[in-house]
Picture (tube, rainbow, N blue to C red):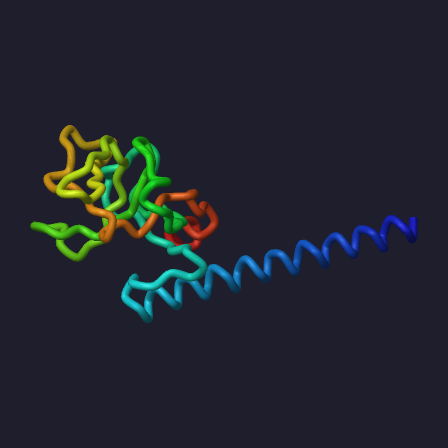
Length: 148
């Protein structure tokens, strides 16, 4: 029984350490983004919050998502990308939409995107310099904390 308790305590200590590392990492990402106005990432990761219903049912308004920078050649049709809008009401805002087509325009890779709940594709193509990264996952715990 003593051996079991010793192993159990060691496992709890490992879990506590891992959770601490995760919480500190997420905190560093959030603070870095706030200070840099979403222009810097931490180890290629950024955290964003979904503000509209354009990606329902994949992401609901208020969902917090983890986005990772990727090389343009690694982005594929079907990926959900977060990019900086450049025209109209979306100028300067972060948009998370799905890649529906990729083509070359004047020697640059151009991504056609669309909110999956939208009937039409986004009005402008998205170029590599606008893309912040590809959605890796919804962060359910952060979403729950942020909606309280």
